[in-house]
Length: 310
Image (cartoon, rainbow, N blue to C red; front, side, top):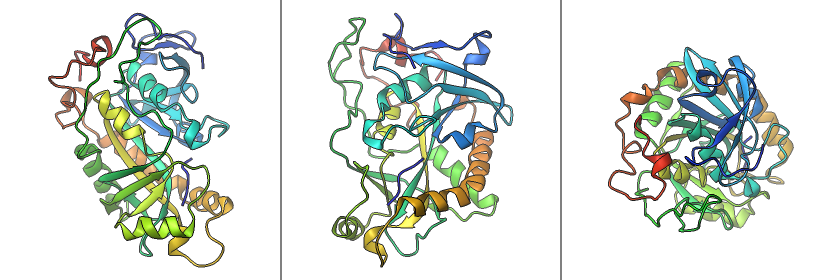
């Protein structure tokens, strides 16, 4: 099984997050698409602007790196920090999603490295899941817990539909784009997310496989549900870097193995991500279940989530 590869403030009166990043406020600090991944992805952006965003939930994993891909404004966020100093269970997922939304992001791509739970999902497989199973233990997974934010705003307790956890439009776009580029992406499957940072035992891995699940990772949750709670589209693109412990023989998964396979595939994963960015619908054209996730709900966070532009 594999793991994928600021300032603290109250976010201001509108709860939308406060970006800081030198000259060029306005357009330079806005993006409609977000990518949560490693530093190797934003290195190829055009006209990159690095900004720090404060949130009511503390600092995100790192600065946001904003730029253009195929004429689209994109914000990249290193999930583990640019020096990879944050293990999966210590990532501030709430701050990460909040920070992206505060700069205008409405569609999020979440590439991550995973272990394959079936022999046919070997290293180098790209799988775009349609379901997720949470096997984590300590992660905060909601904005709507009734606890006051630093400025005194109290979110209501609400229950967001999550039967289909990923954006159907984003999923279709990712699968079609990868296949068009010659990478036969697997359309659908279940990602099971474990706490980490350790890898699974053989017994755990065999149990995961026996449930019919497809791949296992450490970072896909709670990103997807937090995105849904903010009305964001979220699409996971999982890269299999190894067969998980229960699906292989030998000594099991090693960190070096994961890094080597990811490095061998990072260029084509980056290409797919950039092609997906170019093919996603315009923000104002969104009409998927994600865009309507908060319809009719009184969240108590209207200054953020009831933005006039979906």
